[in-house]
Image (tube, rainbow, N blue to C red):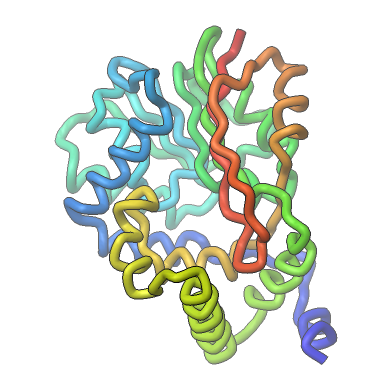
Length: 275
């Protein structure tokens, strides 16, 4: 019955309102969130430094990662997003925390092959390209803007046995009314809490430490982002490495976790170097 209801509510132009979600989240950004984002970016790139590097943020969302790059000494940050609300939020977040003028925001679609973007030392896209509707093309398009010997940083949903089911759930969620969305969020959190308990962990502790462990993000906004994150695709590390090998990229770091996918596929992280 549930699957029939999901099918009846699906539309060809289904897309989650990422911009509104990030705009609301941005009001929570404070010192802890900024420090968490900086620490995770440093750890992911280590031993590579952002200092004096040009930084292209593909799918800037709230702008938190672009801000982290500036605070780590990037010479120039160019932040782009398909959603006008994301670009506006990024502009607002950075302007409140950064007094320099060495950054720019732009509304554009990474799938548009005609877009003009600056060649950059670091092209960074965390948890974005799997929401474009054409994951492989989005990866290749983003890779075009990496300087020779530059770095491509990607975080993408890993493949699990539940990906097809989650794809349907996400489409249903995007087309559901607010009441149904709220019920879905509460049900997910309740079940996730039981899942943690079976593993000897507490949901309250997970939520308390979430900002520090998850790039300065917020648990509740990430739940909404996960449930509604459509379009949705996933990719294995093997597929990604083979895809970028054709464009002369070498994988120099990967953080790939084994996960069931029952409560979400989660993002695998990669650092590639253009050779």
